[in-house]
Amino acid sequence: MPRPRVIADPSRITVTFDKGDYETVRAIAAKQHVTNSGIVRRAVSDWLRAHNASGSLTDEGAAPRQTR
Image (cartoon, rainbow, N blue to C red; front, side, top):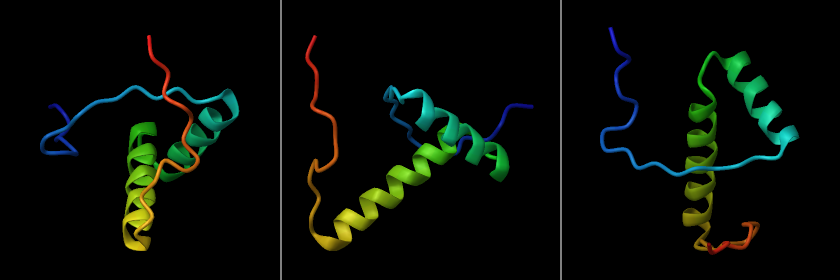
């Protein structure tokens, strides 16, 4: 039986982490019995809520966008 969808209308992006951050995400996910993606979704959702609430939705802390 397939897993139920977590998100009704999902959109997908690819994110690359440095090895230390990736291992931290894996450890947290394993401890909380959730997927790596679940940890990342929760972190991004929390970050967006915090920035929307403060009215300071900016790209502060984001890496510069690279073009191909």
